[in-house]
Length: 489
Image (cartoon, rainbow, N blue to C red; front, side, top):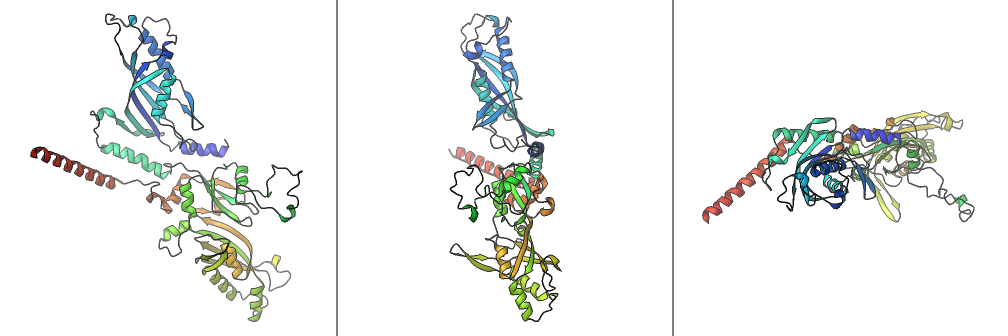
């Protein structure tokens, strides 16, 4: 794995949850373990106990859903033993007993290691670990009961929550969490919220260079190459189009290819691109909202801002001459006003036999300057205009169509901001990539309202107390009704 992925693994592991589960099990010794050499001791029970303890503490690996699952860090303690059928009633010494049908009572503790982004959704439960571990040792589980559950952060093991079965003596009964347990649990959940690790998520940004395709492969075939399409000498493994893709740029920078792209850009457009493996986050960033939406904070995280550099076209120059404008082109007030009006007003166009409507957008004038590179030696040419445009939806070539309607020529188009907190300053050079920090991810999710739609929804103390009171009221009402019925009977 590359260095960037290793660094991300370490960051995720620092804010993952450790879960330690203790099971009290009754193990029936099987034929496999009875055949194991037990040494030269005189007590067969103690000899078999030593063999079993050694087997239980040995790490092992098994495959589940085509993935390797490692089980280690198992702790076991021997409590007692008994025999299912007392075949030797008169033999009181354990050295004289036969080991057939002997059952060991043990406490086995299995700990979950901090889950990385690769294994987070494929980690098996501790009970599955337990059954595979016991079967590997050549024993059979007669009875298994989870007696303790411990949840804590790796860096704060002493401040976790410990739930013990001894505090719920009767089977089928329950108890409310104490104030200390509730505070410890909420402390863990809040820290996981802060670092956005309840749902493991990878996300990074890229500065897309020009002439790079926003897809997995380049499927465009040039007109000159159509005659050579049937050439048998052409390499079959060669890409169809030949242009690099954004995933090639990410791989060259040491970033993974399995993160999905959110918001495509044309090959002739550069700027900020966002990648993530969280489908819910991707949909929240990508799906547009109506321009008439009253939620200004949500608009900020849904909007995408672009930097445009334009030159007046033939239509604009013709209108300038008809107005009798200065030949030097310094009277750009009317041209800029018309440009800003057309860029912000809604319009429609036909695509694939359908009429597509484009909502209004926001445009900000930056500057107007003279560039000798485009003047061709004339004073009335080469007047460039820089504008920032913010849109809430990305229809097919929406900005390019608006610029064409205004009669301007688009020289460069660059995305400079998206998702509220992502800007082009994070990756200043074309081809640069950078992982998003946990705080940046949390700001994006909070701004998009994902915490209110089930992603990181956590109730506060008051909500928990209200729910507890409601449940207690329900229990008391049920108890009173049951007592009333018994009294009537």
